[in-house]
Length: 248
Image (cartoon, rainbow, N blue to C red):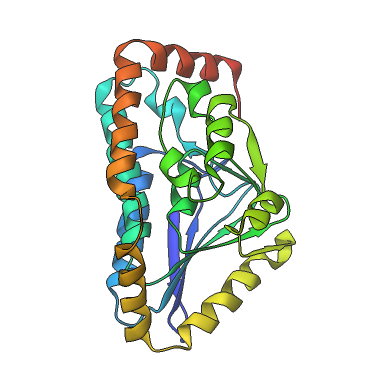
């Protein structure tokens, strides 16, 4: 399955994204991820959720090739799918740990920015190439990972930040070698899972309640500009250039 999951005896759930070759999720993939994460959070036997990935990188965002020449329905679908997936991570009733390796781009930043804890491998990089793709979105989530002016520069230039930089900012808890990533995430998860599940669930709810930014509303605001750019033809031109260039 492209989005698989398992739960161990301690109540630690591991969700694994696997959409070769670069984990660029199609519309259905975003909804599948949302459903899995929400279902695990609602399971009283689950105490922590880890979101990880197979392959070359954590997530390359949306499947642009699926969107190109597919009409407005596909764009609406991916907007709603990303919204659902990011919201599922944020609203998951238990803490969500993102275990990130390689590239984390676009929608990947949306997942990670809404996670409670981020563990990254030393080769992980984070970025929003949306401007180069004729779209906007997930600056809401990038702003939870890097300072305001760094976020703005990354959006305008489509440059990336390293796991080391994010560790310096405090948004990445630990940076480890890639072969240690899953174990490091499970170690943090086990520490949380050992605590009272009722207290942890209320802690998650309370922390969301004091967030200074409504991440769902601000992200939905961003998405409106993506649709506007598409109506102006900018999105279609940028996606076509991406497809013709053959970027991974």
